[in-house]
Amino acid sequence: MGSRQRLLHGLGHVRRSRHTVLLLPVALIVLITVADVVTPSDVVLSPLLVIAPALTAWSRGPWTTGGVGVLALAAQAFIGRHSSVLTSRGEIVQLIALAVLTALIVALCAARERRSRQLAQVRSVAEAAQHVLMWPLPKQLGPLRLACLYLAAADEAEIGGDLYAAARTEDAVRVVIGDVRGKALPAIGEAALVLGAFREAAHQHEGLPELAFALERSVARYLADFEPLDEAGERFVTALLLEIPDEEPIVRMTSCGHVAPLLLHPGGAVTAPELRPAPPLGVGLTDAGDHPLDVLPFGPHDTLLLYTDGVVEARDHDGTFYPLTDRAAQWTDSSPQALIQHIRRDLIAHTGGRLGDDVALIALRRAPAHTRSHVPS
Image (tube, rainbow, N blue to C red; front, side, top):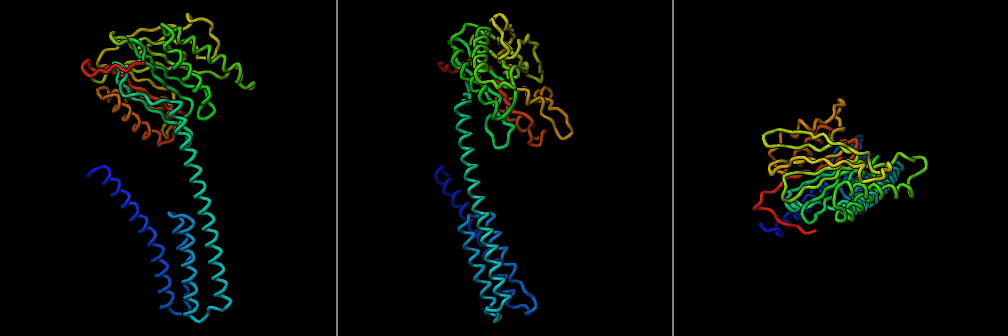
């Protein structure tokens, strides 16, 4: 079956489902009407007709709900006429009550529809902002295979205070992952600043310490202009900068207060390298020499797992932290994409879907030489 046929089949299935849902309140009106007519006069079932528009509002819009409400009113009038009480005080009160309740249900349905449209617009803007701010990483960049994941802690949010980016230089790939103090929307400004500064400076500086110092100056200038007075000295960004040369089995790293990555080896071995971290970006370091450079082996079958502290600080309902190292050891032979998906599912299961902080993950592995494709900067 072609893609067009699958699309048409799916649309037809949706239409049939919607029609089936609409038939239920109509059938309910018919059933209540017949039951009221055939039962003794002291058994009054017509007040149950209000269930029909209420049930319709659950899945359909205000116009359809109003139509079902009118049908329920017609059924109420038919029952009154059949019982010869259409003009009685009790029957008129029931008709008015049904009309008022139907109007309220339609009003609530319209409000829900309006809120749903507003929420859809907010989600659309958030998704657009995420793609502008956090460019999706390619699956392969130079000699590296990459996979990434971002989960925002804030409800209905797509972006927050965590960040990552990658850039291709002449003979290497540079990557940054970071975490702005705070989370969700208030931290987006700093995240956008660091990402923009990294993308601009990644090609201009020979070493990672110089690149880290350039990011420090950008963050310091931003905070000097926009940091609230009541938060002076409390805004900063932790960041980890990496450089993976094309032809050397090593990785260079400069940590600005960020957690060290995990190095996954085939067969289930996981190590956490000891880095010499500098303070986070934004604390006012004045020289590139303040940012140490660490060099570690990184062979063709190894995988680097970069993450933010929202991963290891995620708790289950008993307050137990997520054991990232132990869990990652189960999937050391997986591809970067499979590794990220394993962790995603496991992390959501661990927390019950309730994250306390934003989460960012990147998995990096050298591609075999025969599958490498050079991606220009």
